[in-house]
Image (cartoon, rainbow over all chains, first blue to last red):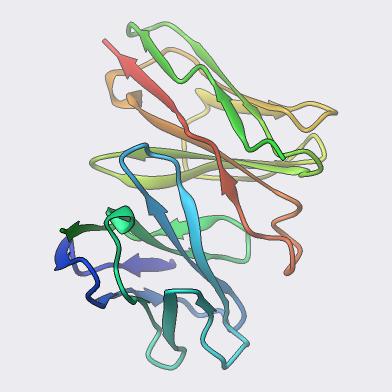
Length: 113
Length: 116
């Protein structure tokens, strides 16, 4: 069975700093998709970034980038120049061959002023 | 462009009752997925509908059911409610999760169900 592990339950950084959230997954599939979603206190789940496993290039979206290591089954999220609005729960997710998302337990990220 | 709309946002039920939650996807999206979020179990997949057909189902008892209408709107129903059904129920839509270029899920704000 596919699993997703986020080993950091909570992280806290100062505004403007860079922070990296870890995610590892386990699968026997060769082609799949990985996502990072954020869920602020308003609880709306918002897509941060998406990575296709067959693409070597790491995905980037403005201040957000990933370090995708397929062989190591690692998919970390880097947030540069962190802002107060980045405070949220961050979930790593794997889309399996049945098109369902398998989720990690989440990392609570707090950006301090 | 309107987002994914879920109703009701909050509801309180008692054990044994049933509940129906509604989800209106983004216009043009044909796939609707449902997820349950609890502090203990985290996020778990319930089911996915595409073109009025249930395409996939998670590991939930038969008390959990759903359907999708011709306009892609979806409902999920939970019968004989148990205390453990208290959760945030999230609906997400996409153009088509089975299409590599269209499998990004856009989520609604969720329906918070409390079972007393």
